[in-house]
Image (cartoon, rainbow, N blue to C red; front, side):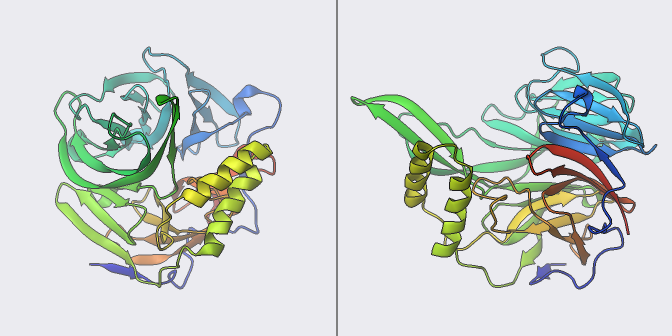
Length: 377
């Protein structure tokens, strides 16, 4: 069935938290024990025993906390040895609370036991030399779905301009060649070249917020994708491709006022006038699309439901896809049936959710992240 979304479903879902009640648990400090200091959380989950695990990207660590938020242990660290990371970018909880971590720089997967003990790792071989894997999720029969985009670096014939490479979803098992289950447009990238006396001296690569988004469709054995431009969500998996959700409301034009919002957000964060002037030039030359992309982000919860965040043009979200203030999420069943909506507190993003509640990463006024558990109403 094809679900049409013109507006949010009428009622909140039963597991929606109460933003007015506050979190039941908040973990993090501005100063003090480094185990509680977070810089950028790339993933997190609530385990079966009520404890929590988070993937802290800059420190390249997995950190474990008990149900009351007390630090239990830290594993990982910087390096290329077993269970060490260079750029850990994604965390999944597998059956039995086994933990799967994708290292985007190493192009390697790492498996850990629920207590943090290292189990094994595997290089992402057999996926093609031109594909850079940036996303992974469990697939049937012990396999994995992988997704990535072509490496779009400038060559002799492309030193500046706007490009949009293809992304691909693969079904893969360690030690085998990957099998493609779907291709779709990747994110938009702008390349700016600086020359001096006819010689190339610098290249700047910028990604815009029109990015492909993915979520794990566990109940449907596939991957939900939206390409950041078209108002559709497509399921790609072993049974082929089928569009499950289409946004049917009127598309908002990306007019002068919307562009001013984008530019103002960037200028407000600029550290000096030279940077602001460069940003003004960049925005004046940017070939914006005709309409605002309606779908900003996707998220899959532990029950296999799909959460969809509509685009919200405000300073915390733009111009390059930070998406920290997506408060209203549509919730759909695995087959695309609308179930209701969830409202999250400001400055937050869901890391993990179930019928019991939602685990969030939330920024404070100083833009320092905290881990919060919000139980269902």
